[in-house]
Length: 101
Image (tube, rainbow, N blue to C red; front, side, top):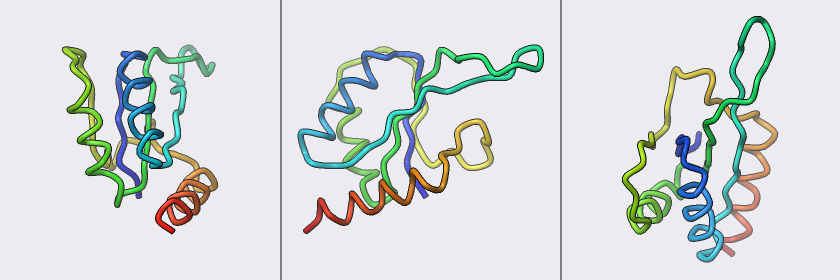
């Protein structure tokens, strides 16, 4: 499982990503897509994800960035459009284990 930040504010995603990388917390940034007229089209939303045990660090990183932007943060279960492929999550978990050592 992962904790996810979903927002249309690319600046917020970049700031949070920089804070996480500064603290050696692995994260993955994903461009979201939406279905429009049967085709997949880039959405204006971005997703940033960390493993569950790094969720609190991500929450602190979001709070450290002063923003008035609308964002969603959490597990986001039952939202299929915000799923992350299993392979990416495995890599993220492995990187997270390496960062702990």
